[in-house]
Length: 248
Image 1: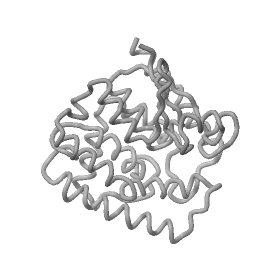
Image 2: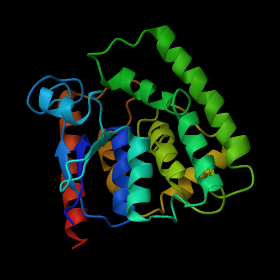
Image 3: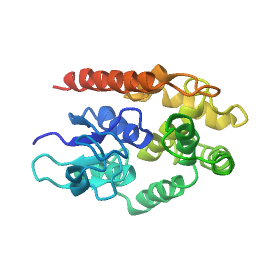
């Protein structure tokens, strides 16, 4: 069976969630760089890419043998687990699946607002007004409080004492804001959340998918240069290539 193809950028938060799952399960894959929002040959608005994912977003997964394609990170995560039998991260019990799915739906317009705060500093081609940024911060802080007080109230991971794809999806969003990386937000007011972030560092694949963030570093007061972003993505691709080479 040929390995799946993942389209995206190593720096992208939802792309990193999908890559983390594949690395964690030691699943070989091919990674193809796609420039989000661009109509050129390697862009997400090019007709060839839109034929695979009409939304023109990253990530996108393509099954090399069948040509089956899907977009949306959370759909990709659940599809990979179902199709590969990765029941440890997405159990085949309907109720347990329902709890994970519920978190993944909650994630949008809540925890996902973390990426708006990052994009406002990175994507100067997009217009994020002060009001939009303030609203994203407000929504994220409300959601972070829910993770801290509810999801992590009495368990090591979001949905119990076992890792699930919900943790992977959440960590790539929450962790990017911390002082370890972009330093956009002080998360110390959320003690359980902060402890969970430390636990997630021990999950296989963490270092590889967080490499681009480490390369970009603190952007709280000054946005990264185009060269810094390019270098982080190229370095991330090299890191992924080395990791996948060890699977065979």
